Length: 270
Image 1 (tube, rainbow, N blue to C red):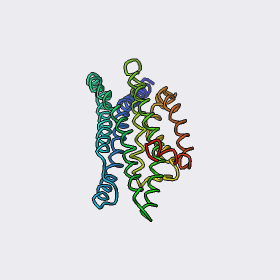
Image 2 (image 1 turned 90 degrees about the vertical axis):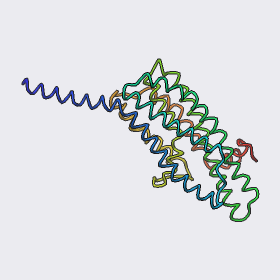
Image 3 (image 1 turned 180 degrees about the vertical axis):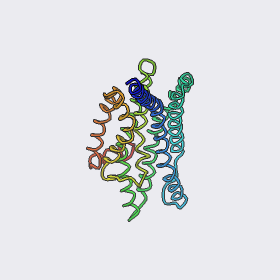
Image 4 (image 1 turned 90 degrees about the horizontal axis):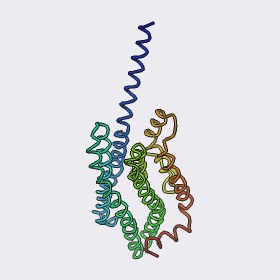
């Protein structure tokens, strides 16, 4: 009986050790997943668009696009480094480096809200002097950009809100802080996921597939949390309370004539 008890205890300790390891490294995995997704989505797409620019088949990249891309790359890198520091027990370095988020987050939001009308304006100006099939193609591009604006507004507002909530909780509720930083980061991630052309997609007719992929990309973290805690962490409840209603609004307005008439005015055109 003593041997059997010892064996059960050893098995239990082994399971506990594995769970502790996953607890420590699940957020590193999530950060790496986000980072790889961004690379897989944007690198091939950017190379393709560089060729189109060289062939004069699309407008050149504005400088603000490069700035925004660099800032987002820095944010994803920071998230990965911060998660790794915590997983390896370097909390002091994690806290010092976290100051960078106070600069990066607002810079990302500001550059994003400058970038959106800048890109839209390129297509608007091109459509103003185009004719025939070129005009039809540019008008279709403007409709797509108008729809995408819905997600960009949602992303900018939610990313800002979630980062603020995360930073406010960094000392009093580290668990909420940690999860909310990841939940903030997943909000703009569909911009990269949309460029993974091998994934099934409802776009451009509907943004539904991107909404489902957003949930899928946070599923590993959520499911592991639920398994370990046997409950839904408060961070997910807060996130869903804001993400779900804004997502419903985006889907309701997507492709409507009313929104297509309003979008250019929001961006200073029309």
